[in-house]
Length: 121
Image (tube, rainbow, N blue to C red; front, side, top):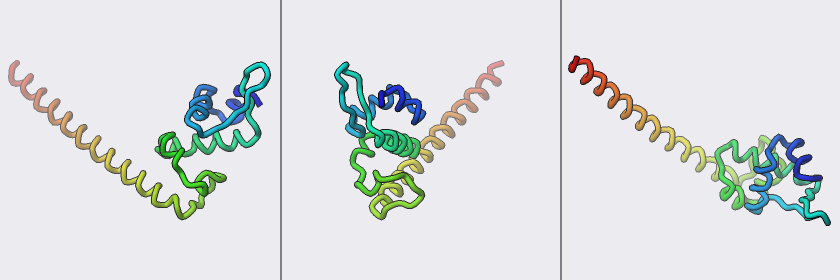
């Protein structure tokens, strides 16, 4: 199938699909006219990559996943992936904590700035 058909079937943009291919997560063959040609497996693979991206993994992360993680996306995780998912969750929790701290600092700065403006009036 061509890239447009793959994009329609997966809901991903052709640009994203090209990006996945460039990252080595997807393969295509070139037709005589130079257009990309994807096999039926590509649909599953694109959906899989998109699934992991929505979970917060980068393309670099996905490229290093163990084979068991790259089979059909199901609710069951292979044992090797539990550590990867837990590590990603810990990273996201840390980012959230840092963002809350930044937000609080900004809110305090705005609060003190508002107070100084009120006293200047």
